[in-house]
Length: 240
Image 1 (cartoon, rainbow, N blue to C red):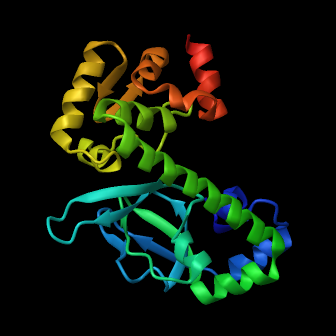
Image 2 (cartoon, rainbow, N blue to C red; image 1 turned 60 degrees about the horizontal axis):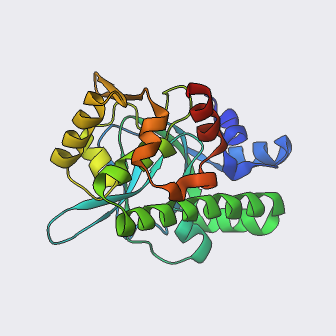
Image 3 (cartoon, helix red, strand yellow; image 1 turned 45 degrees about the vertical axis):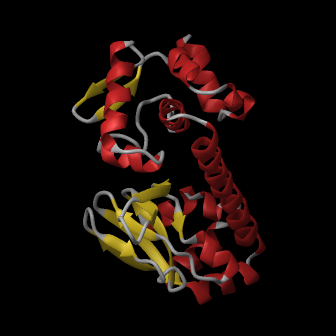
Protein backbone atom coordinates (compact mmCIF):
# COMPACT_ATOMS: atom_id res chain seq x y z
CA UNK A 1 0.00 0.00 0.00
CA UNK A 2 1.35 3.43 -0.92
CA UNK A 3 1.49 6.21 1.65
CA UNK A 4 -1.12 8.20 -0.30
CA UNK A 5 -3.48 5.22 -0.38
CA UNK A 6 -3.01 4.81 3.37
CA UNK A 7 -4.07 8.42 3.92
CA UNK A 8 -7.07 8.09 1.61
CA UNK A 9 -8.32 4.98 3.44
CA UNK A 10 -7.79 6.31 6.94
CA UNK A 11 -10.78 7.68 8.90
CA UNK A 12 -8.39 10.32 10.23
CA UNK A 13 -8.39 11.99 6.80
CA UNK A 14 -12.03 11.43 5.85
CA UNK A 15 -13.45 14.31 3.81
CA UNK A 16 -10.11 15.78 2.76
CA UNK A 17 -9.38 16.46 -0.91
CA UNK A 18 -6.47 14.81 -2.70
CA UNK A 19 -4.44 18.01 -3.05
CA UNK A 20 -4.36 18.54 0.72
CA UNK A 21 -3.56 14.88 1.25
CA UNK A 22 -0.61 15.09 -1.12
CA UNK A 23 0.69 18.14 0.74
CA UNK A 24 0.48 16.30 4.04
CA UNK A 25 2.06 13.22 2.54
CA UNK A 26 5.12 15.22 1.52
CA UNK A 27 5.70 16.20 5.16
CA UNK A 28 5.24 12.75 6.69
CA UNK A 29 8.22 10.54 7.48
CA UNK A 30 8.10 6.82 6.79
CA UNK A 31 8.95 4.60 9.75
CA UNK A 32 9.07 0.87 10.32
CA UNK A 33 9.27 -1.31 13.39
CA UNK A 34 9.94 -5.06 13.67
CA UNK A 35 7.61 -7.39 15.51
CA UNK A 36 7.40 -7.31 19.30
CA UNK A 37 9.28 -4.05 19.63
CA UNK A 38 8.21 -0.95 21.50
CA UNK A 39 7.35 1.97 19.22
CA UNK A 40 6.45 4.50 21.89
CA UNK A 41 7.14 4.35 25.59
CA UNK A 42 5.41 6.05 28.52
CA UNK A 43 6.22 9.75 28.46
CA UNK A 44 6.89 9.78 24.70
CA UNK A 45 3.33 10.43 23.57
CA UNK A 46 3.98 14.15 23.04
CA UNK A 47 6.76 13.63 20.52
CA UNK A 48 5.15 12.35 17.31
CA UNK A 49 1.75 11.29 15.97
CA UNK A 50 1.91 8.14 13.85
CA UNK A 51 -0.44 6.69 11.23
CA UNK A 52 -0.30 2.94 10.67
CA UNK A 53 0.13 1.92 7.02
CA UNK A 54 0.40 -1.83 7.62
CA UNK A 55 0.58 -4.12 10.61
CA UNK A 56 -0.96 -4.07 14.07
CA UNK A 57 -0.12 -2.01 17.15
CA UNK A 58 -1.37 -2.41 20.70
CA UNK A 59 -1.68 0.56 23.03
CA UNK A 60 -1.23 -0.62 26.60
CA UNK A 61 -1.26 0.66 30.16
CA UNK A 62 1.10 -1.22 32.48
CA UNK A 63 1.32 -1.77 36.21
CA UNK A 64 4.81 -0.64 37.21
CA UNK A 65 4.83 -2.99 40.20
CA UNK A 66 3.86 -6.38 38.79
CA UNK A 67 4.16 -5.67 35.04
CA UNK A 68 0.56 -6.63 34.23
CA UNK A 69 -0.81 -4.98 31.12
CA UNK A 70 -4.23 -3.90 29.91
CA UNK A 71 -4.59 -3.32 26.19
CA UNK A 72 -6.62 -0.15 25.73
CA UNK A 73 -6.72 -0.27 21.93
CA UNK A 74 -5.74 -2.67 19.19
CA UNK A 75 -4.93 -0.61 16.11
CA UNK A 76 -4.52 -1.50 12.45
CA UNK A 77 -4.00 0.17 9.06
CA UNK A 78 -5.52 3.65 9.00
CA UNK A 79 -5.40 4.10 12.77
CA UNK A 80 -3.21 6.69 14.48
CA UNK A 81 -1.59 7.19 17.88
CA UNK A 82 -1.46 8.89 20.31
CA UNK A 83 -4.67 10.80 19.60
CA UNK A 84 -5.17 11.72 23.29
CA UNK A 85 -1.94 13.69 23.43
CA UNK A 86 -2.62 15.14 19.99
CA UNK A 87 -5.83 16.74 21.20
CA UNK A 88 -5.03 17.80 24.76
CA UNK A 89 -1.28 18.41 24.52
CA UNK A 90 -0.62 16.46 27.71
CA UNK A 91 1.45 13.33 28.34
CA UNK A 92 -0.41 10.02 28.14
CA UNK A 93 1.11 7.22 30.21
CA UNK A 94 0.74 4.45 27.66
CA UNK A 95 3.05 2.37 25.50
CA UNK A 96 2.73 1.32 21.86
CA UNK A 97 4.01 -2.08 20.77
CA UNK A 98 4.25 -3.65 17.33
CA UNK A 99 2.51 -7.04 17.23
CA UNK A 100 4.15 -7.79 13.91
CA UNK A 101 6.18 -5.81 11.39
CA UNK A 102 4.65 -2.33 11.21
CA UNK A 103 4.95 0.47 8.64
CA UNK A 104 3.96 3.97 9.69
CA UNK A 105 3.88 7.60 8.63
CA UNK A 106 4.67 10.22 11.24
CA UNK A 107 5.29 13.89 11.94
CA UNK A 108 5.96 15.91 15.11
CA UNK A 109 2.93 16.64 17.28
CA UNK A 110 3.39 20.40 16.82
CA UNK A 111 3.13 19.98 13.07
CA UNK A 112 -0.05 17.93 13.37
CA UNK A 113 -1.63 20.57 15.58
CA UNK A 114 -0.80 23.19 12.96
CA UNK A 115 -2.55 21.08 10.34
CA UNK A 116 -5.62 20.76 12.57
CA UNK A 117 -5.84 24.54 12.87
CA UNK A 118 -5.31 25.12 9.15
CA UNK A 119 -7.49 22.31 7.77
CA UNK A 120 -11.06 22.17 9.18
CA UNK A 121 -11.89 18.85 7.41
CA UNK A 122 -8.89 17.24 9.08
CA UNK A 123 -9.83 18.70 12.47
CA UNK A 124 -13.39 17.37 12.13
CA UNK A 125 -12.23 13.92 11.01
CA UNK A 126 -9.73 13.64 13.87
CA UNK A 127 -12.38 14.59 16.43
CA UNK A 128 -14.79 12.01 14.99
CA UNK A 129 -12.04 9.41 15.09
CA UNK A 130 -11.26 10.36 18.69
CA UNK A 131 -14.93 10.00 19.62
CA UNK A 132 -14.95 6.48 18.18
CA UNK A 133 -11.86 5.56 20.20
CA UNK A 134 -13.40 7.08 23.32
CA UNK A 135 -16.49 4.92 22.78
CA UNK A 136 -14.26 1.83 22.55
CA UNK A 137 -12.60 2.78 25.80
CA UNK A 138 -15.99 3.29 27.45
CA UNK A 139 -17.09 -0.16 26.25
CA UNK A 140 -13.91 -1.66 27.72
CA UNK A 141 -14.52 0.08 31.06
CA UNK A 142 -18.13 -1.16 31.13
CA UNK A 143 -17.04 -4.71 30.33
CA UNK A 144 -14.41 -4.70 33.10
CA UNK A 145 -16.83 -3.30 35.66
CA UNK A 146 -20.03 -5.13 34.78
CA UNK A 147 -19.32 -8.47 33.11
CA UNK A 148 -17.55 -11.73 33.76
CA UNK A 149 -14.60 -12.95 31.70
CA UNK A 150 -16.67 -15.17 29.40
CA UNK A 151 -18.94 -12.25 28.52
CA UNK A 152 -15.99 -9.91 27.98
CA UNK A 153 -14.37 -12.39 25.61
CA UNK A 154 -17.61 -12.85 23.66
CA UNK A 155 -17.98 -9.07 23.37
CA UNK A 156 -14.40 -8.78 22.15
CA UNK A 157 -14.97 -11.37 19.41
CA UNK A 158 -18.21 -9.67 18.37
CA UNK A 159 -16.63 -6.22 18.20
CA UNK A 160 -13.94 -7.46 15.87
CA UNK A 161 -16.11 -9.68 13.69
CA UNK A 162 -16.20 -8.25 10.15
CA UNK A 163 -18.11 -10.98 8.31
CA UNK A 164 -14.98 -12.32 6.61
CA UNK A 165 -13.06 -13.66 9.59
CA UNK A 166 -10.31 -11.25 8.59
CA UNK A 167 -9.78 -8.95 11.53
CA UNK A 168 -7.24 -7.54 13.94
CA UNK A 169 -7.61 -10.53 16.29
CA UNK A 170 -6.42 -12.98 13.63
CA UNK A 171 -3.67 -15.28 14.96
CA UNK A 172 -3.09 -13.23 18.11
CA UNK A 173 -1.75 -15.31 21.02
CA UNK A 174 -4.30 -15.98 23.73
CA UNK A 175 -2.16 -13.96 26.12
CA UNK A 176 -2.83 -10.90 23.94
CA UNK A 177 -6.57 -11.58 23.97
CA UNK A 178 -6.40 -11.85 27.75
CA UNK A 179 -4.68 -8.46 28.00
CA UNK A 180 -7.53 -6.93 26.00
CA UNK A 181 -10.18 -8.05 28.49
CA UNK A 182 -8.31 -7.75 31.78
CA UNK A 183 -7.73 -11.46 32.26
CA UNK A 184 -4.95 -14.02 31.99
CA UNK A 185 -4.09 -16.55 29.29
CA UNK A 186 -5.11 -19.68 31.20
CA UNK A 187 -8.63 -18.34 31.78
CA UNK A 188 -9.06 -17.27 28.14
CA UNK A 189 -7.77 -20.64 26.97
CA UNK A 190 -10.32 -22.45 29.12
CA UNK A 191 -13.21 -20.30 27.87
CA UNK A 192 -12.20 -20.73 24.21
CA UNK A 193 -11.98 -24.50 24.70
CA UNK A 194 -15.52 -24.45 26.09
CA UNK A 195 -16.73 -22.30 23.17
CA UNK A 196 -15.16 -24.75 20.74
CA UNK A 197 -16.82 -27.71 22.47
CA UNK A 198 -20.17 -25.90 22.18
CA UNK A 199 -19.65 -25.25 18.48
CA UNK A 200 -19.49 -21.49 18.92
CA UNK A 201 -15.95 -21.02 17.55
CA UNK A 202 -13.32 -22.96 15.68
CA UNK A 203 -9.64 -22.78 16.61
CA UNK A 204 -7.06 -23.53 13.93
CA UNK A 205 -3.39 -22.55 13.79
CA UNK A 206 -3.93 -19.78 16.31
CA UNK A 207 -6.88 -18.28 14.44
CA UNK A 208 -10.33 -17.99 16.03
CA UNK A 209 -13.30 -18.36 13.70
CA UNK A 210 -16.80 -17.57 14.92
CA UNK A 211 -19.11 -20.22 13.47
CA UNK A 212 -22.30 -19.61 15.45
CA UNK A 213 -22.85 -15.89 15.89
CA UNK A 214 -26.20 -16.26 17.61
CA UNK A 215 -24.74 -18.48 20.32
CA UNK A 216 -21.75 -16.15 20.60
CA UNK A 217 -24.16 -13.27 21.05
CA UNK A 218 -25.97 -15.27 23.72
CA UNK A 219 -22.74 -15.28 25.68
CA UNK A 220 -22.58 -11.52 25.42
CA UNK A 221 -24.95 -9.23 27.24
CA UNK A 222 -28.11 -7.64 25.89
CA UNK A 223 -26.48 -4.24 26.42
CA UNK A 224 -24.90 -4.63 22.98
CA UNK A 225 -28.37 -4.48 21.40
CA UNK A 226 -28.61 -1.80 18.76
CA UNK A 227 -25.16 -0.53 19.70
CA UNK A 228 -23.62 -3.38 17.73
CA UNK A 229 -21.99 -2.23 14.52
CA UNK A 230 -24.23 -2.71 11.49
CA UNK A 231 -21.87 -5.29 10.03
CA UNK A 232 -22.37 -7.45 13.14
CA UNK A 233 -26.16 -7.17 12.97
CA UNK A 234 -26.18 -8.08 9.28
CA UNK A 235 -23.76 -10.93 9.78
CA UNK A 236 -25.80 -12.37 12.64
CA UNK A 237 -28.97 -12.16 10.57
CA UNK A 238 -27.28 -13.72 7.56
CA UNK A 239 -25.78 -16.57 9.54
CA UNK A 240 -28.94 -17.14 11.55
